[in-house]
Image 1 (cartoon, rainbow, N blue to C red):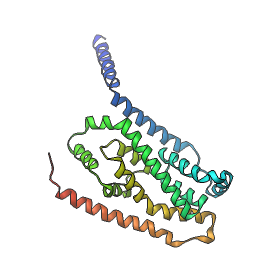
Image 2 (cartoon, helix red, strand yellow; image 1 turned 120 degrees about the vertical axis):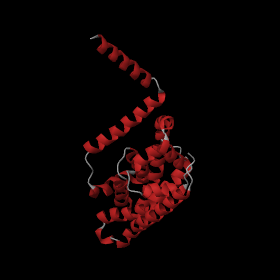
Image 3 (spheres, one colour; image 1 turned 60 degrees about the horizontal axis):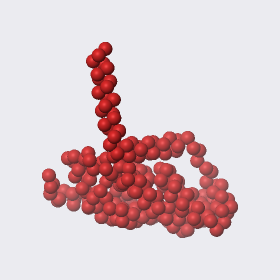
Image 4 (cartoon, one colour; image 1 turned 135 degrees about the vertical axis):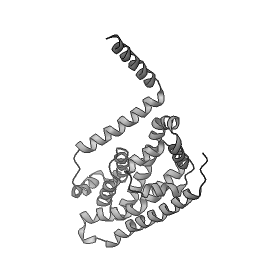
Length: 236
């Protein structure tokens, strides 16, 4: 009985010490935030794409602002960027929809990065060792090209990557520029598809070209990054 009580008290003290660390508390808040977004995505029904143009007409002149801000909030809440871009194309048309979708992506990337930096960077910086430390240094010295490479990789959603970048030592300006450039090819392609949903007679099969260019650029960037990493000496 007594040893069990001692173990319980020891565990309580250990948890108290962990909870007293601000970096741990902030990182737990980040995880809870992401988990909450994930549960919400599973429970909230998706709207009918054919009803989106009517929604845009009801907003009138505020529709572009609502499109950018609303799209950014949805991206921050981990809604897939494909859906946001398709919706923008359905509401505003191919070209305007792509432009507003890119504006939403830029704003969402900034918000996600800042939240990840405030809530997760200290926790990660205190604990990275070995290969993870090398990876963190790679993110710290990363250029726009490196951000484009990561963005084009099918590893995770747009919002989750933004939060993840904030927890690294990456610089925000190259991250934002790279995020917009990497998002541009599929933004024009998916916006054109979204516009075609509400205007079938205006389908432009060249809309697939930007997405194809994105895949080709991804392969080239990955190959260049891999060669550069192999030539780089390990500082450890």
